[in-house]
Length: 271
Ligand code: KIV
Image (cartoon, rainbow, N blue to C red):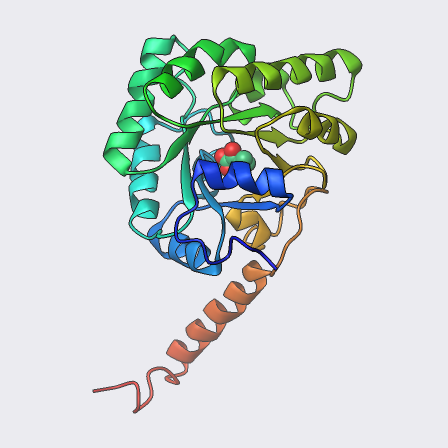
């Protein structure tokens, strides 16, 4: 049983202690008030307002088109619902890659306009200067390496990253740089479990895995994926805890049938 279950507010310090004490960190994405409320009430440690909003909320093929304004809107909706979880918001593509001044300005906007607790950025050595500047300004930063969807057009595919020694060595170097730059945690996306075990053991800060095996300090999934909202998305790493697509479809068809057959509303449902 979790010793952190009754903690009033999860902070970056809480996550650090969880790593030290071997308690796994639970993290899930959210983009709106109603789901964020359920997720927080269930006791999730971290809620990520991910730029996967571009996929699951807006229907885009990639996260590349997501804007800072869109992230701010989703984060505002989530922040209103959450009492306990640490809320991390993705800085979207184009809001931090140009230079560290722009990165800091984007991070400040997100913090001031949403009331969230931290930002997340994709990349390794190339974002270290920006991470340093943002952390120095008092904003906690979560890193994200391995498969980084904002660079999908550079990689060309969503397959497992860092399978080869050279890419694995770069990743190992990158996470050390991110830790030294001040990141409080790092997401490892779609890398071999053996590599994530090595990386997790080598870092003081917690690692949060998605498709990175069981040895990370925590796990993250996209809410729509683990709730089974999309029948067509079935990667190996994904566990669907419920098949909501099927249940929602049944409910919708029943409603249509009830309306057409005058079964809804009945007398008790009328004034
Ligand atoms: O945007 C997102 O949902 C993410 C997670 C997949 C880690 O970055």
